[in-house]
Length: 433
Image (cartoon, rainbow, N blue to C red):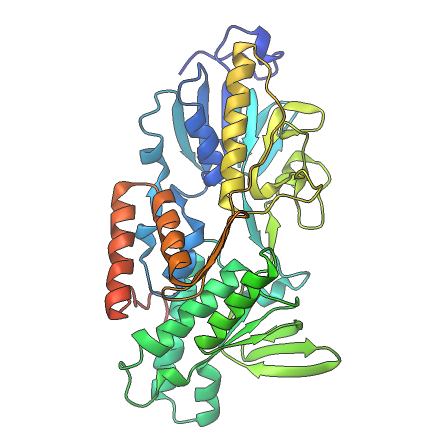
């Protein structure tokens, strides 16, 4: 590392000392920025509360026993280990001192000249945070293994109970939210029950499990074209998933959910509820002491910098970035990666004294899978469904995994599951009480 001047010094561009670039978050946006800075004459620090990068689009596969956690995670130090100008710190951010240009990790202060905030998003329960205890979301490995435990324990407990009412409640699975995560979870749980577990029990028939997908809107996958949403709906129904459209959740407890459809109220008895209905940005707005929109995102300039603070950049799910149509960019991995790569380019140019054009997002398309060999793909210029779309979805996800080992293991796991309907990661971890 180079020798640093005091953190209160003036603009980096006029100072001969190597600038310090701090990146908060080892997700898609943060790592994209870090890798883009590998040859920059600067000292780069990546801070994350976990020591691994997580491929979140495949978390649902861990939650439904299709993959193990190590298949979709990779150590951050290994990813940037070949970058001589980059170090990794394990820590939880507690605040940002904008005037002193420091990131706070408890009592520790990490000085910066440029700051990239890429701290992602968390679950949003629309003012009902108490629901999280009984309806976990899916953002972390711990979430996925907890949901896997809940799903598998439901079948085990149904096998041992003699109470028919409790058995029906145990074999009813409710997924709240009809976006990509909800659709993929519903399809995967249906296949787990109807195929992988079908012959494993003696007192129950797993095929009788009810998988209910609750969506407040008029269709599933609302970001896609209506024709592809309709295809996804039919594919879910073919798998035996009950889809409740135009249905809001009004209550949630350990024994079920209260729902409202039109003017009518109803209740679904279930001991396994999964939340996939919404997300909220990380506390970055609070750290930066700036206003946020209703889901906690920070508005940024055209170059992704914080207004009035050209040395601070906010990207990914934490940033409110408007596209060409004036709508917020989607909170998906490709958007975060493009923003991270752009900030890296901007910093390279700024250090070299060159200008950079404003950020422009290029949407590559939308993909979602609905169980075994079925998916929908929308690239704008072409739309696909069925087996061909599933093969394309699989290839894209394997390609974007980090590390040859992860790609190989995931490809072999999917090939094995496709040929045998077996899911090898059916482990119940944690408490079974």
